[in-house]
Figure 1 (cartoon, rainbow, N blue to C red):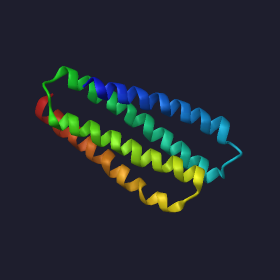
Figure 2 (figure 1 turned 60 degrees about the horizontal axis):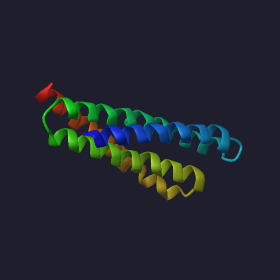
Figure 3 (figure 1 turned 180 degrees about the horizontal axis):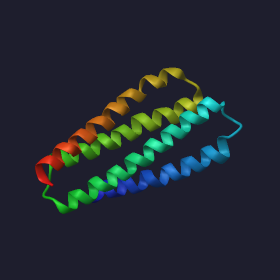
Figure 4 (figure 1 turned 60 degrees about the vertical axis):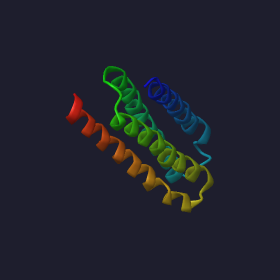
Length: 123
C-alpha cells in the first residue's frame, strides 16, 4: 500500500525534525529525565517509520493481505500512542500520560506479530 510508505516517510521526517528540536530547542529547557523521554519517543518513531515503509513495500510485492494491512495500522497507531504520549509527557510533565504509552507498546508488538505471521504464510 502506497499509504504505508507515505505514512512511514512522513513519520521518519517527523522523527528527524523532532529529534533535532529536542537536541537544540529543548536542551536546557527540560529536566534531563524528560529529555531522555523525548529521545525515546523519537527513537521508537523512527524505528517504526521504517517498519511502515517495509510494510508498504511488501504490500506492493504481494497480493492484498489483511495481515499486512492490520500490521501497518497497528504500527501507525503505536507511533501515535507511544511516541505521541512521550512527547506530550516530556513537555508537559503530566505523568498520567505515561499510562497511555503501554497501549502504544502493545500496538507495536501486535504489528510485529502480524508481520511475522504474514512472513510465515507468504514469504
